[in-house]
Length: 321
Ligand code: A2P
Image (cartoon, rainbow, N blue to C red):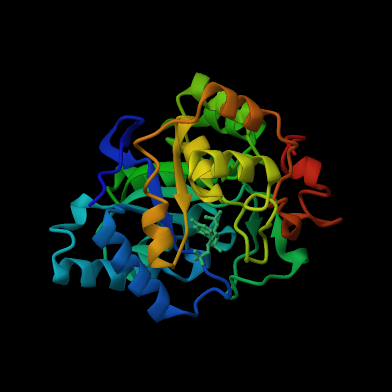
């Protein structure tokens, strides 16, 4: 079984495994068996860090996978796992945060999370339907009020760490200015085609750990792109090194210093994606990758609306797009 390197996280004594397993599968809430089975197999081959979110509707499947892996002896206790979930925009209102996390914990059949993230820097008016939503339901997020409630979650021991996802440097700075407990993590898109150089530097300076999502470009999803795995330069490097393009991408992201979430429900690829620790990219390979034209796979168009808090992609990402 592969042992995955870990990184320290803020003031928490629980370390984050630097490769995690993604559980978002569209349409959300379907494919229960496939997801649960994949998670159990992932634990068998060494994954310990699992990423879910309220909106993915995969929390219950992950909870079932954890129970099954415990029964089969693939893990000895829940404490060996690092479980992340995310606050959906509907619940991104001060009084809804703690109840949302309690519901997440009930879905997962867990007493605590390792990491709870604000999923996006925007709220939706409270209501039943998580996804899809109407764009006129998008509202400004009161970050101070929401973050206070996130801090409350950590103080109550419902989660070991708190953080954000999809925050630009500017939004992160606004949060850092007001936070009593600073965000431990910013989970953002990162791949050789979306390198996040500015954000990596900023987070390093501020002590915020970056977790990369869609390190392979999330091909085959409604938000993803084939451009990463089809990239000619990456293909050439992969061929010359006897690796797959996916391994080159994952190794590149890993070398940026944070952690990454990769999703594969294919057993062979699940193992292949862990075979990235015993070798390095050469300086020349890293240089070639650093020169690749950039293309963001997930611009977040669903959050842009002429009457909403963000009227353009540039506003949503504060120009970091
Ligand atoms: P599959 O589940 O069939 O393996 P990301 O992690 O960037 O969101 O990308 C996930 C997508 O990449 C999924 O469609 C997944 O498909 C595919 N994928 C994951 N690992 C590999 C790999 N090693 N080679 C090719 N495709 C992969």
